[in-house]
Image (cartoon, rainbow, N blue to C red):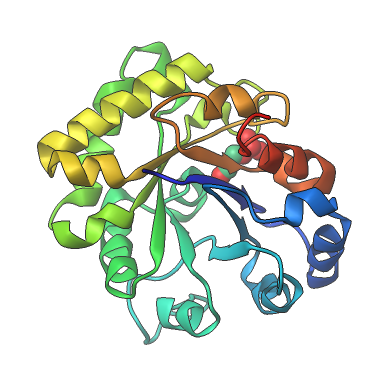
Length: 255
Ligand code: 13P
């Protein structure tokens, strides 16, 4: 059985003091243990240390928004997975479309990052998604298949069960135009079948698949009801404690 996963991707937002204010401002019910659901906050690197202390007693996990594919060396400005491990970080987002767009990340660099993240026992949240023109031209499945195959190429199958995929259509990120819950289900179900073919059915069944792209507190439940959607990767709405609390609560079983 796959636990639901609600992930906040704060992107390049929030100073340390703003991050602490966010945690303090979250309604109490959002900070309680949820049955079969997990909450992960991915702040900027600079806020990780302070947040690790601030969430003591709150059942949240921390995630990083990126990492390098080497453990150490002459890579000015980069962050090693070893630094994350020592700080109690459990998750790491890899290959977000903004990193592909602005920082030249490719499926091949994401493939290298994934191998090291798995080796270091970090749980990778690997982002894939099609552009607006891929979408309009009906190329979604072809594009996603290419991304998935390149990212999985050469990985050790035994490690891959913990992998989390985030399906984030690029045309839906920060635009207010989300894929419908039914569209996201269709893609997630198709992904699972493809991964079962590439790897095997039990590994595909154990991987979690998130939807991301203009998720709001109103829309969250619609996605979470889909059988192959195991959670949400939330950008804009995760910056507002009230909205994010509502999204967390939509992962609680209906009363
Ligand atoms: P928005 O929720 O702001 O569309 O961002 C989605 C996203 O990129 C999460 O990683």
